[in-house]
Image 1 (cartoon, protein in one colour):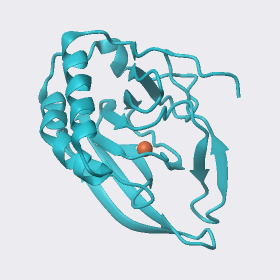
Image 2 (tube, protein in one colour):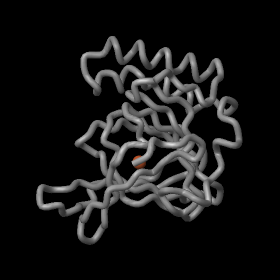
Image 3 (spheres, protein in one colour):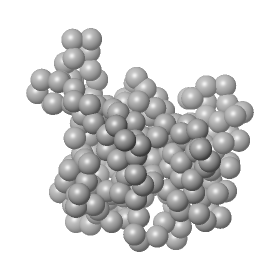
Length: 198
Ligand SMILES: [Fe+2]
């Protein structure tokens, strides 16, 4: 399969090219995330590159709550994706994992994020809760901090950018019940791209 630039613009192509060079030169995922930070911060600060259609929710969402997950770029070997996650006001994601390392940052609106740890018995413990403002971002380096939930706190829709090293919308990952820790396999899908049949 070849690379898919769903949003095919010079900004996206330059960003992805830079990210790939950085990953190739990095000794570890943590080092790669650190080295990508300036480039990711620049993308979050640029108001002009993301068309309005990729900042809209999806009534038929695989995550519920009208949440839209828009694919912007996907590597041919599925080892890298860039997507926008759009969460309407008052909506929240299920508690979920990602199963890949990368960077996540807020582009528009505000969010509360809750991070969970899960022990061997499957019990979930909330380890951190924080408010996010546009421009804030963080690294996901599973298994640490891979399980979280985000809720939009702004009157307008929130938009976060995800640069992750899998095909996050199409892989089978997990949603978790907060009270019991029970995991349910789920595939979030993308608003604008089909996933292969399950
Ligand atoms: Fe997430």
